[in-house]
Amino acid sequence: MAPLTAEIQISSEEVVKASIEVLGATTYRDSISRYANDVIMPVLGLYPNSDNKVVVTLDHANGSLQDTLTITTAPLPDWFPEIEINTLKRDEMEPGLHACDMHFANNGVFRSMPFIFDDEGEVRWYLDLSFHGKMVSPFQRLKDGTILMVGRHTIYEFDMMGKTKNKIEIDPNFGMHHDVIEIPSGNLLICVGKRNAFINLEGENILSDSDFIMHYDRGLEQITGEWDLGKSLDVDRNDLNFFRPGDWLHMNGLAFNSNDGTTIVSAKNQGLIKVNWSDELQWILAPHKNWGKAGRDGQGFDTRPYLLTAIDASGQPYPSSVQNGETS
Image (cartoon, rainbow, N blue to C red):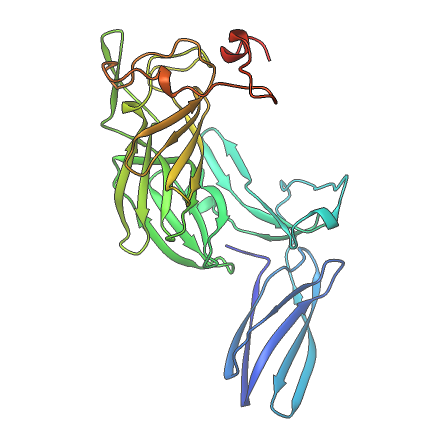
């Protein structure tokens, strides 16, 4: 699943500490801090379609040993993109390589292949998730080093070698999409839709989509909480974007504030919304036009007092045309 990786197995009569270097324009280095007689050393960052030179160093009580191994890799799939680096300002960047999602779609069948490339535009790692058959995203590395990806009803955890650490099938009533974030506890907040959630539009009950956040406890492997955006917002407001029936919100991203336990939601069809840990609306950042009552039936509280007012550098509110999103 991660073709540009390898493992080196070391057995020694003396305890040793291992380190490796994958040689190239951008050298990849790694080490294992503990001493042991038997060591399994992961090798990441191999170049595709190459006879990679990997320098292995073993430190022991009386000195060190070093050898250079050759690890041959296959070429990338021919449909991989060519990466061209136009501008590189390394002193303005975080150290390390560059990771991104990649998805190939053909008549509803997806091949998700997140990859990592270096400053020269060389792909140095990728994960082949085509076995899932659907989109798996977003690609992210958690604090404990786990690679996390989610499908509609499946949470995958991998190590950097592409080995599956965990696979969890969640309650099929929830459908995950767009964004997953790790919060300080190590648990997850995930954008979801629910199969049994409806909104009332002009007297008709319509199945809604993408309007819940769920809290997933990784230790318990359970959904332990949810936030219902439908109860806090005006579900029949369609002034920002055209949307198909039910897709009134369309969450794209989440940001968690650990200082106060609040979450900011980026919603394509409405704006930015902040809710607290108790599922209470804090504010709305969006054009002021046509906000009404909250609730899936439109019978909740007035949302207008929660709208933030845009101000200039001197603290003065902009005119109503700006507040309504008509001018900028």
